[in-house]
Length: 507
Image 1: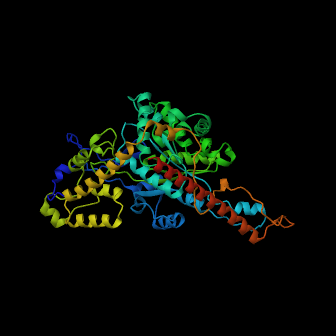
Image 2: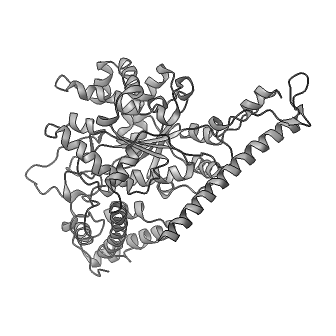
Image 3: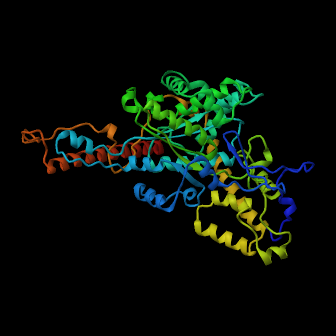
């Protein structure tokens, strides 16, 4: 560890050109750019996420919701949720309701029992990536790391949209062939997070749009006027019509009916299947519009869960950029490059000198090295101790950066090892339209897989002469459904174990 305090001058935000002082401005968060507020002195402030929830009309994730999440799923909330990195939502409660749903009806006939069994109703996860370069950075992977955890917790299908068309439409220089190439390499990066191909479908807009998906795009587009698009996204007379139309493409991915190979051809049933969209808060305008359109189309409205941004190395109020090598740790960076970037560019919350830092302490809340540890360090206790030591002056900036460097190097090295195992054949597997396999809530059979059963005892129907069932008969039917599901799960586990044993024997 370093034992000297690094000069603050070396940690200043990376804007080297001081010929013009930035003019005061409000924070600006939209799907294409992110900037914090600039005060009268030209200082960029940290993004005010509390204000964003008010401006966007979203709901903060509070302790009560975290407690309910743990109760419903049986899993401790992810560190992102515990630390308000995932801080806001739209209708996350509706997804939890759907996952745990138990319905009670007064009647005791077969129809009432069928309705009572409507638990563990399906939903899916949807997220995306705009492929603007051939390598992602650690700011991109945080959403995917969280999505991977959600998929493991809920055991639901995931759809990943690669918006190569968007990156072409919103760029003056990129070609179609270039962004399609980025889609392939970015898909490899996403796969390296560790997603299960049996539960995950990744698609490129340029390659997948058509059929049921295109029908939803057109339905969506018909409901949105130019004035609406202009008001939401700030388009003007110089905006190409592709930009204006793109919201209908991103929105249509929210609908289960866009994916008949996963959810089936019967739109009267699949239109009620919702999705949960984990995304950065800057994407929310797209899905506010989508939720409005869903209502008019009589589709399930998507739920959202919002993440805050991982600051650029230059500090609060900034966002990592794929086009600026000095703003981010890229997944292709070497251990030495990571070390040099953090030491040279990471904004510090330390004091001017070691003596002053020891006396007054640092400010972890603006220190980039500490901010990164908030994302990557699992232990809440260890993180709290680091913050306490830094703010008290016990821990120096160089020492804090050394801790950060260690974790960043380990994370990127682990990613690179997994990435090296992803082949073109792997990408083809993930991007092939095909049925997916998932179970949802492990305690209850999926409703779309429950087949009505008529139980018989000694050759006689369990139904009484009036077509109603006794409570004991209802319980017996429910129990048999659950036993059948458990047997199916055990059979799958045995198959996996046998396949693993066979593979080991061949080696």
